[in-house]
Length: 319
Ligand code: UT7
Image 1 (tube, rainbow, N blue to C red):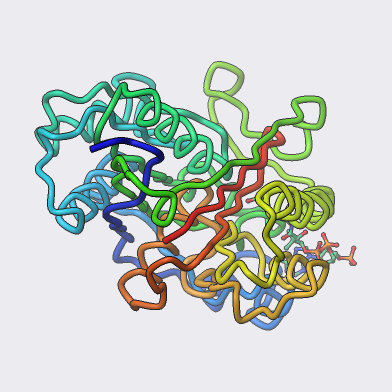
Image 2: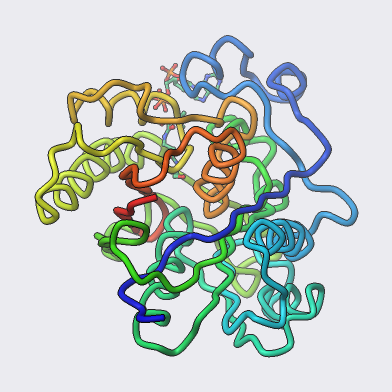
């Protein structure tokens, strides 16, 4: 088959069993269910327990994506795991996933681009397939953020959750079904607004965030990169059926939709149930939407992530 581009041929996700509600968090920090719902849209999130490490959740999501794609693990040429909360420093979570799935031929690596990690990994996978280096690549976003959250900091502990989402990317011989373009970037100069110290710097690695600054960055950058993608591909924003954005805050999605003059109905959301799962949020949402059957063949969509680094990444594709 001639390979013109790559396309998603399977999706999967895995969420921890334990549900943590806003009401529970109210009991140990000065916050309220009403404040969290109104300011973020989050109602509950999942918290990983035993048997639900980042790599274990990643492997579960990966296995489901392989089943959905109807290919065996031995067919995989690469496994890329996007995470800023890997199970350990070494081996990489991608190698742990390889071992769990029996993907013996795969080249395995982790990447860290925080909440944009899945988009960056997707771009690398797409480039590898288009360059003829691979036929099938498992791209996973997986996080265990509850382990690095300061549960006494009400500015961050209410926001995040754990989980994993995965896609299998394969070759496509037609642009009618596949990835059309990417728009990604980074601004290391502004990284201080969202940080996590490494364990070399301090015993406890906690996530710290200037929420308002990240909020302002997201509300400006998301519409900007979406407009660039649409214009470069000669598409009106209304011709793009779905916008799958990183699930950080319902108000960010609302502001992006408003700036683009689009109905919020084109922006599926699940952050009410899972909170912000960083690199995992877009592939989890993609999997849920696929399983609901809301995407029609040939529909256009944009996936867009943003976060620590600072980083941002988006992908235009035809389903
Ligand atoms: O994945 C990418 C990274 N993250 C994000 O995208 C997050 C982006 N930022 C946000 O989502 C929002 O900035 C937050 C949800 C984090 C905060 O919402 P905000 O509307 O920007 O609140 P704020 O920081 O402006 O704080 C407003 C007030 C403050 O009180 P005062 O000074 O007005 O008395 C805060 O102390 O709300 C207070 N506050 C809270 N109150 C109750 C902050 N957090 C809480 C809380 N419960 N959990």
